[in-house]
Length: 68
Image 1 (cartoon, rainbow, N blue to C red):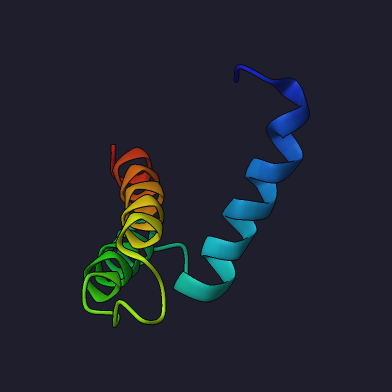
Image 2 (tube, one colour):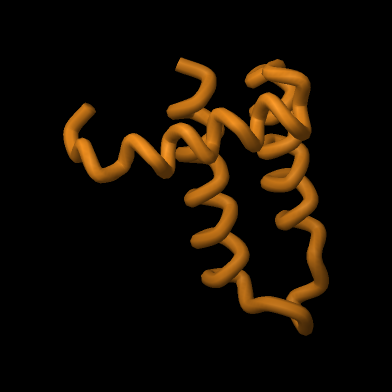
């Protein structure tokens, strides 16, 4: 682990995945990809394209990290 102080944060993430996804990381990753897909269809009056792409990129990177 690069930053030992992140151990508690990783433990909290693990607890979240266990609680809400029954420990099935693949299910959480699928939900992240679905959210990314949904962001592409939000009306431009809600959020600008740059903002949507920024959020989609963040979620995509998280999903990729969790699936590897």
